[in-house]
Length: 335
Figure: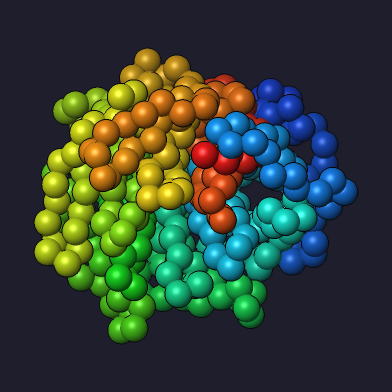
């Protein structure tokens, strides 16, 4: 699915065919305020290993958000809802199985990236319109004060990028610029100096991929490229040497997937294949053996969702359960 096809699909959910966008889209959405969300009375129950369980749904069907975690909570940031581009921030508490609204981002955007270092969440890039105009904004969220602070913007504005952290630095990788060109850029942000610098580019230019860090090494997997189409490419970046290494590719090439890390393994979750078929596939990469294993699939195929891991459990939420049909449902997985 190219940029224009994806934007058209999102426009459907913006109001042209609202009744088809998610099983709960007919209900009135809650206001995007700091007020607490509608709470789910049930308590979280730790499921058996290697199984997915249904957890409390998000307040709104949302896709193309950024996901990260800090201080034991799962965060969904921005994205696209049936009302359009969002700056909403919600936090899921695994211990109470509830979602709550937090302070909204200053700028509405989707197809952005987020990561966390020193308990501070950094949201970067994305697009603030359905025309694919890239933004370079970087904003930092402090959960202790429930507030956002504007930071220095990326050197090159991009959307459909990925971000991860290593050694206290933030790395913004790949994505598309405002011309829809797919980039292999690697820009490093230093929180101490509030400044960006250019680092060694990814060997493979791509967008709609996933990046996560294991033992100070960043792994970038999957995505959409210009010449190769949809790939399972896995490349590892070592910030200490500013070098990239190609690793064993993911068994299932896909784009718009998400990833999370548990027990030093990278879990690639969901997405779309080269024919835009929605996937429930979960595959795990072990850096110690440079090999992949097949894991329990998601309860339902989806793309454009969010995922992160807290205390040894992976949480996946939102996205689209078929093209242009948003969902608020969420799942937890214990490897």
